[in-house]
Image 1 (tube, one colour):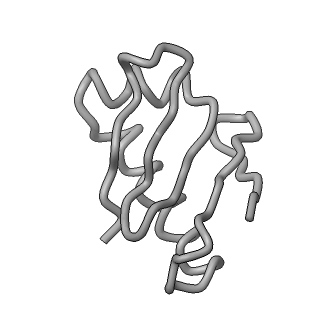
Image 2: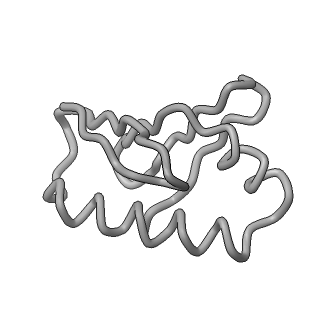
Image 3: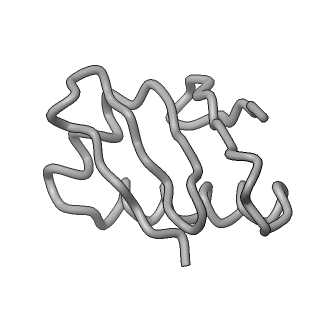
Length: 79
């Protein structure tokens, strides 16, 4: 399943695996909240990843943040 979220004035696709047990809306709220906190208070490497974010993949309780540079991609725990 694929959804789009608005993050930093751009639409970012969020991909969900079929094995996720949490409701999609709850996961999207957690993801949005976590991303906003990280853009304000995160370390430089995380901010660099968020600045070049191209997609997000939700696997279990983690969000895999894919950026333009493969070296900047990160995994972020949602819970």
